Length: 185
Image 1 (cartoon, rainbow, N blue to C red):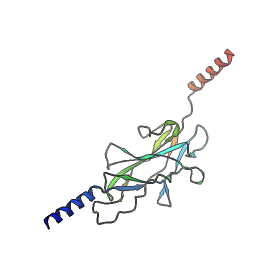
Image 2: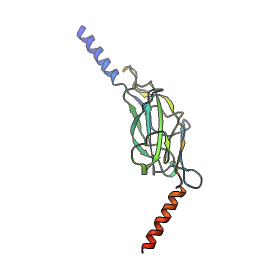
Image 3: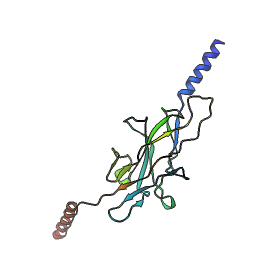
Image 4: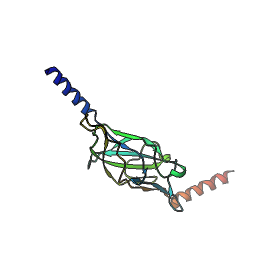
């Protein structure tokens, strides 16, 4: 009997150690989540981000300074869903059980910057959302309770990515270089 109780306690402890919180990485889900990302071109009105832009979720413990990436960067949709990411899938936070709270931040950037999110929270060709505090779905610490559905990104807000205009000096140097090339012919 004693061995059986020890075995059951060990199994419950092991199951609880594998508890994982989950979040659904979509920036559009009915009326619960509506966080479009725009980019401001050098001239004209803002335009919704397209497949030339990438997005990724980051998480931290509430109020912590260090952030961890969730999954891989995902391109924005084109067509009728342009400006949104709806194919990010369910992301797992292995160190936080379902029902736990985390801060979530969504970063978007121009794919020309590469497949890694730029450091910081904003700059030329990238920007990020304000922090959203979420209660995670997924398996909680009690393995006898069924897992909750993945948390939606409720409270997530859209943002605009600035695409800077070239400076007057850069345009002048470009023009001078073109004149020199033309003159050599």
